[in-house]
Length: 304
Ligand code: CP
Image 1 (cartoon, helix red, strand yellow):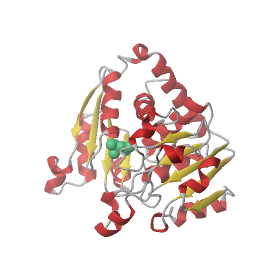
Image 2 (tube, rainbow, N blue to C red):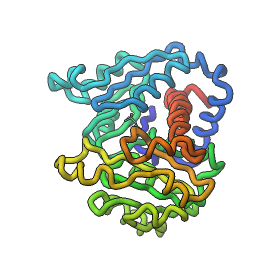
Image 3 (cartoon, rainbow, N blue to C red):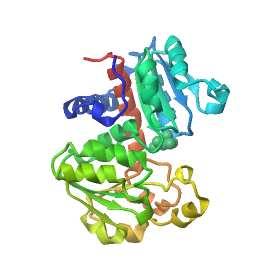
Image 4 (cartoon, helix red, strand yellow):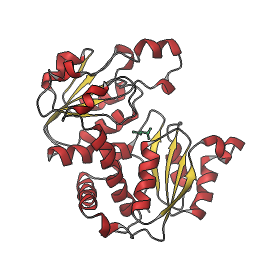
């Protein structure tokens, strides 16, 4: 039995196979509409979510399966003090596969160790968000035709942003990737990530001003400054609008640069940018359904 805790749990060859499957699902949805007719997915979300939970639910429903779960820790027995280990042992009696989001780093991993069914990390604190990374990679591969030879700018909260940490981990395995980290001093990417890049001779730069690097970028990955990760409200208020991508800044970018964002956004991308053909973040949300369908089929061993 296989779980998904980190994007590195799949080799690049396995990822290619997963993305091929996701692209086939996109083109031939009817072929897959009943594969999970007798399967149940549990979505156990101890933290708020729109995209991840609902795209998993949409994915399982589009495969013919059914979904049970909770979207708030307070409506589960966690509110009475039940551990994730006990919860997953019980969920294993009710469902065939489980997607779990938790505010504590490592909680889905703890659950996977006691689980009798595949567990998918749907985001654990500021640590990892592997299915967002699968979504990001599928979006890039589908829209650009490759996953190598990019200069990618990651902008915003690079300290707490789990989507950023997961994506960097995944992209270092591809040739010709250069990272440009764009953040205020307080939200710089953690040292363990820059140490890993140095050890592997992966080029990166750290800058504060987005305008300075816009013309170099093939991909721009915007992120939200996450209120829920701050201990101090004043720091959040000071930093929340540090970056706002607008049409003026987009004029500095390459004609084929893609703007990605895991969403939700607050103010960091002006709504006027939504009309720019380079804005890929809503297509990205759609790819999230196809890749989660492919992931469910793969973890349940329902495809070759
Ligand atoms: N991208 C993402 O994880 O969004 P949600 O928090 O809405 O699931």
